[in-house]
Amino acid sequence: MAEVDSPRGDLDARLDRIGRHHFRARFHLRGRDRAVVDLRGLTTVRQHAEDLIGKRLAPAEPRNDGRQTPYRGHPVFVAQHATATCCRTCLSRWHDIPAGHELDEAERTYVVDVICRWIEREYAPRRPPD
Image (cartoon, rainbow, N blue to C red; front, side, top):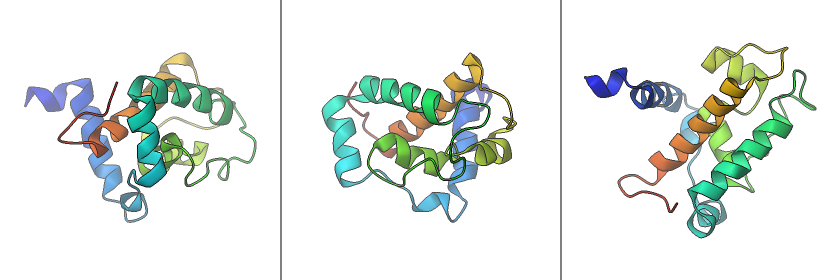
């Protein structure tokens, strides 16, 4: 029971809930997107996520909000759709992070943690490369 009370347990429970949504359940790391994680490692992909979130999601009014995240082309994009971190509306609806303000450091870190945890889970039972 302690695992559910831990931050990772809470995050896993949220990802389980989001993953049951019919639209979100369609997303998985495949092909080139999976190869990026295989080749670059999770540490580099995390840096990519931090950069992408900072540019595309963190502003108070992101450019093209609701349409700014491609469906493929990078594992972070796939993970964003799978985890409902693709736009400010989804962040508000699924993660209780309201739109209309710039994401603070804690919110950015949370979003990146969600994305990277989903990628780790896509590799279960083995870990993605660091």
